[in-house]
Length: 323
Ligand code: PBG
Ligand code: ZN
Image (cartoon, rainbow, N blue to C red; front, side, top):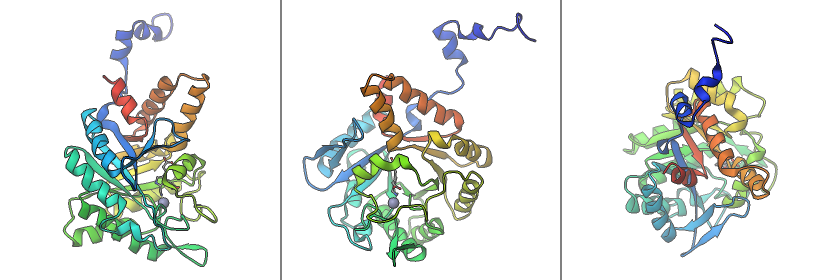
């Protein structure tokens, strides 16, 4: 039946009707807050390119973790930013490394928070690549060994979820195998499965001090035009033992999120990355858009496309707005 019997505007007439007709709602339990941890004490270091985001030392993290838990946010993902870097990324699997101490701190301060760790080498290597470099090339198999050791060290520190973000081939199987052989069969593996070589990571690399000193990440991260290849990546990671899959960035890749939702029954995460966050804040600061509405619209779009979990630097703002 068409117009005039059908009038689409009827269900939009009042706020309450619109609430009742709403198909998608972002909830606290959808949110994962990324946190950057630095050395020192009493440090709250604002990230210039990410308004509202600060890097914390471990002692400050203790209070912040409690505050995040009190807001009802279920999970954080921790990024260690070490002072010392070397060619093999020794800090990535050091028992007393920055990420490992951060995990212990959050687990002790906020036992109900799910603690996720980003597993990668780029924050820990002096060249800033996500793996081991040999003759200016990122060498896959040696990188996988280091990544597995890093994931194991995070599990030993108490991580509930490890999330490899490096895009090396075979790392999910290697990590799962090592975790299981060492008694960590209950640690969840969230794979950054469809991670694209994106311009939107710029502000993150300021925060994590992980800009490559030469070249770029295009020999390991995905080529942005490739949609079918993203499905292959995700299938492979599931076959290797991933419990959940991530698509990254989020808004420019909603077709990938939608494909993932349709094809797979595992939880699908989408990372609304630093550049996506920064753009909204930059435009809002100029008075060009309403930042809160733009952020809410971005997150509901990500959920509407099929994401179960949204990694967002706005998690605290959004949780506070939910009342
Ligand atoms: C590390 C990593 C990156 C991000 C998450 N983990 C950066 C990169 O791959 O260069 C990006 C997150 C963001 O931009 O918010 N491999
Ligand atoms: Zn990396």
